[in-house]
Image (cartoon, rainbow, N blue to C red; front, side):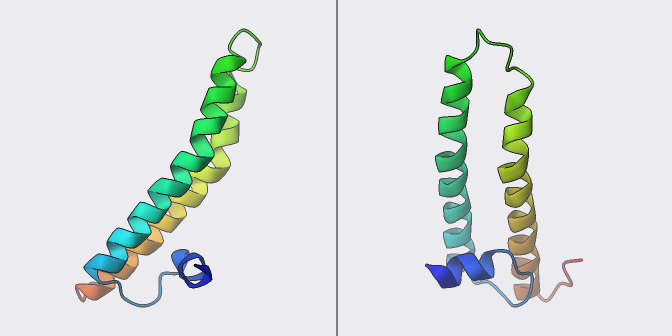
Length: 85
């Protein structure tokens, strides 16, 4: 598992279809595990004045997900002999 997480945020190398699918499923699972509790907590606190807090809290995992997806797509482009950048 450490190898997957270590190679998740790098744009070097190539990805096969199966590796690409594994990384996308891993990112989806991470996103669901992180965001569902945050959104459920926010819904429970909807009466409070915390409406501005949810976008700020989701900014950190969201920016990680965008960076990881770009890195994965660049590695997949390398597999097609494209530059990716």
